[in-house]
Length: 129
Image 1 (tube, rainbow, N blue to C red):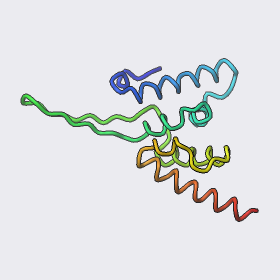
Image 2 (tube, one colour):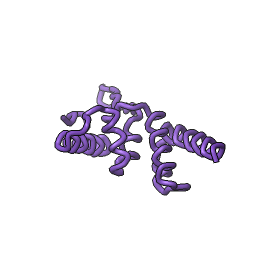
Image 3 (cartoon, rainbow, N blue to C red):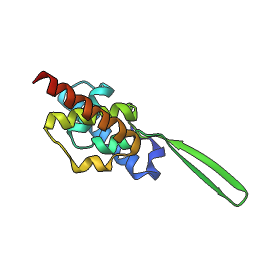
């Protein structure tokens, strides 16, 4: 089910629709509806960056006409930004990519974990060779 709070945030809305599409596809094919499985599937169906970027907690503030307020929101991802960054690093290594264009689209919190993960995975794969 899509959270109504995502209707004003296109990124969260698309990530939520993608997540629900994966849930439906999993149900139809008889796969696990486990949250972790579905988040991994989002990466393999090319929604990983969108999902990861929307895992970051965002705070908006507003003020005007005697009123002020704030709003905290987070996308549908159950993983932390660090976990999403590492998952994308695993995906990069799985595909054998080196400098993907999509890495420039990662928000700071996710990018930091992504680059640490890539460095770790590449150094460990070189040790085994």
